[in-house]
Image (cartoon, rainbow, N blue to C red; front, side, top):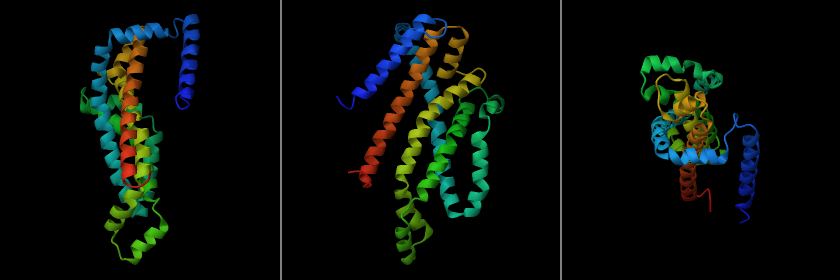
Amino acid sequence: MGAWAPPLVAFGAVVLVWELVATHERFLLPTIGQVGSDLGGHLGTLLVYGGDTLAEAVPGVAISYAVAVLLAVAMDQSRLLTRAVLPLAVTLNVSPLLAIAPTLTVVLGFGHAPKIVMTAIITFFPALINALAGLRSADPRALEVFQSLSASRWETLWRLQLPASLPYLFAAARVVVPLSVVGAAIAEMVAQGSGGLGAFIEQQSANAQLGYAWAGIITLAAFGLVLTALVLVAEDKVLRWRGFKE
């Protein structure tokens, strides 16, 4: 009970404030009851839209994560490559990425492809930075031991650096996996002729159907929570197996 009490109190406070605002500003925020009614009445439709969003978020984050880890490995082996690539990655991270979404739609069509690419771009930078930090977090004394044994770069990477980077890689996953759902939904909002929860939320908001829009937002948040929970379960099992946790 001690573990559950703080989040329950916080959740109750949010619900109370929500209801107070919704009661006095009905055109700004729907009531909890209205959102619950719309959510229950259209759950099947919302899950179908959510499936479309997941079909963009999961491939997008998988591609960005794999590319980020491979690039981090290459950057760790070459300081010249780090100096060349890192400024480009920072520039990409601070660029207004949504401005290129219509261009991606023109180039890649109206299917899942442009949203997958946008999701991959949005989630790339956190994965790259955490992967690079993890590879460089290996114990210097252990590195000296590997060097004294004339271990190759590949052996040092495989046997020391990658295992040492696991907490950082999972920390990156905790950030980018739920972020991928948000990124896919935002890409759906700005892309023409798209489906998914992002397009649903955008359409319902434009039609002043705030209950439906918030039902879509809650569904989107639920998908993000489920994916985050899966990452946490995998993190716990892998880190225990590697001896990071007891």
